[in-house]
Image (cartoon, rainbow, N blue to C red; front, side, top):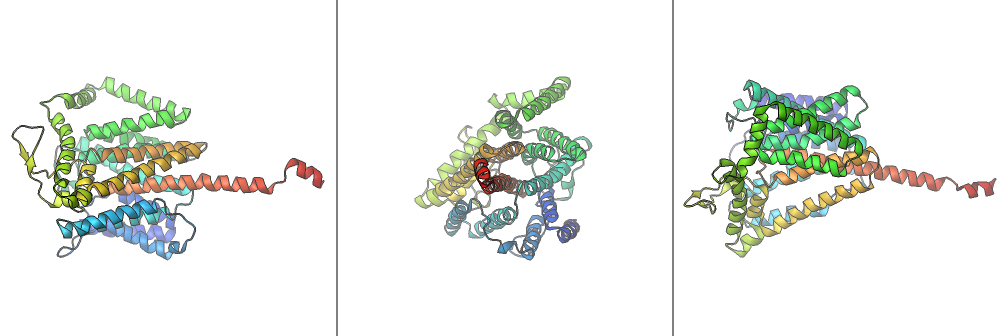
Amino acid sequence: MSILIIILVIVVLLWRFWKDFRSGLACSVAFLAVLPKQVDIPLPGNLPALTVHRLIVIVLLCFWLKKGYARLRGVEFPFKKILLCILITQGLSVVFAADLVSSVKQFLYFAIENVLFFFLVVKVVRDGQDAVRLVRGLCVGLCAVAVLAFIEKYNGYSPMEYYPGYYEGTVMVTFAHRILLGTAMAIGWPLCMLWAASTASSRQRVVAWLTALLCIASCYFSNSRGPWIGMVLVGVLIGLLGSGEYRRRLFYIGALALVVLMSNSGVRESILIRAGSTFNDDSEAHVSYEWRWELWRKAWKEINKSPVRMVLGYGPGASEALSWQGDVSFLQNVSDSFSSWDNTWAAYMLECGVLGFAVLLLFYAAVMRRMLKVWRLARGKQKDFTVFIIGALTVYVFMQTNVKFFAPQLDYIFWTTLAAGIGIERHFTRRNLTEDIQQEAEPAPEDAALSA
């Protein structure tokens, strides 16, 4: 099954890239957003598997080089210094890793699947049109995921039935876990609003809004409080930073959600029970909530065992590769293996120490600072576009406190969204520069009178 999917994906990508590079890039982004990591070609020994995502990045790299983008000069690589610092801190953690093989693999995964991918994409995003094309590609992929979520919810069929790691009883589609699916959908709906706002085609606008509603519904299907809160965060950001037009549209979406909530007792009870049980000490939801805080305590306890571990941690991937058996502080006489690190940030601190974690936080702070600067400087529709980008990025950052990201689709969605934000910045920066040059070239009224 995996071989057939990979062959089909590669054939489609080659066709699109030969037709037009940017069309191929958008198609790549769509595939990266929808395909599960289980689609791979195993390699012998300790060699990492050739996942479909890595093969897509390789195809992208080949055509990127063929088009001569490596020779481009004067195109900024944003966040270059801080991304280099992340690679350096991870590299130092690898040197002192408790499990060298797994740490080397995780380091290479981050370098290739995150930094290299972002570099390839952001170097070719020139303006708002390229940014919209990237977002549209993401939305097409997420639309496919949302449709599959509806099928899995009401028909019981999941494409993951053919792969290891699938379990019944929840809706997870291709994201290997329901919380990860909910995260993708919470990220997706503001991106769909960007797509709807940017297109002149009424047909595309209808599809974009329909996809946004499908994402909201699929986020509900995840039955997870974290993604639900992420959706609310997006709404708050649009209400605070968006234009009056999109605040009104947000009101309509809220009114529609309220109608569904009031008319469907099952939906209403599910949300109230799921949210309310968080504060019930005897509930499973409360234990799940406390577990996120327990992971912070566990990570801090483990890195406190030596100065080297405090600074550099146990190495990338150590949260999954090593055994962390120990007592659970908020439960009496309970010991756990700590095999479930449902907190990406706590796991990262365990793996890369205080130094690596601090650099990671600085990166996210730099990302948000830059996007807010873009929002302040943007005008017209570009301002709303930036709000949607900020909303999607905020969900990604926030959800790292709720779950460990072991679905690579989420990382590709993040880097593509960030590259789209940079494209919006370049669009209005170039436009403003062009306008300034034109104004300088035009003679002032008094100069024109004198020359006459």
